[in-house]
Length: 197
Image (spheres, rainbow, N blue to C red):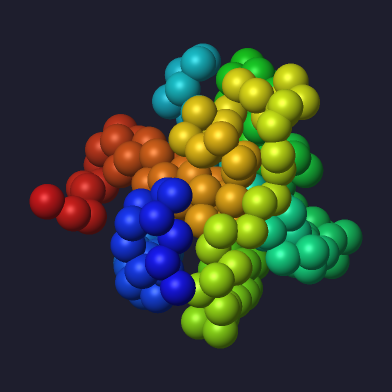
């Protein structure tokens, strides 16, 4: 199937690219967490500078919760994961201030890594079996409610609204790379290097 209204590229080619890019981006997160400890992710630099713990939990929890909008599946995050991971703030923080989220810490970093892998594996498993035709399914049609209208995905969407492809591209892939950039910068503040050149 070709959807000329969006890219003019075959949907199968788009889906193959999306699968590879998501797996590669997830791989950067795995590399990051495998080379850091709690002392790195929970490091407090100064007021106004979010710790690595924020970027890690925020992105993973956002991928988990927005997956529900795309697929209808409930988030992985629940009371059991809360008890195991022990974040100081049980919130991804999208609608909170920097002043609030600067206090985010991960109580059990190993448990967080398990949660992260569970979320990322679920996303990749869904993409591996997804029908390419589903990429053009509209998730949110205009006019958008205020909380959606100001988002990056609303700016990227075509006239039909935010599609499954827009959601994966904006909510997962581009969002993940944005926070990976924050993590790479913050790694320099704790004496660690970046991971890509």
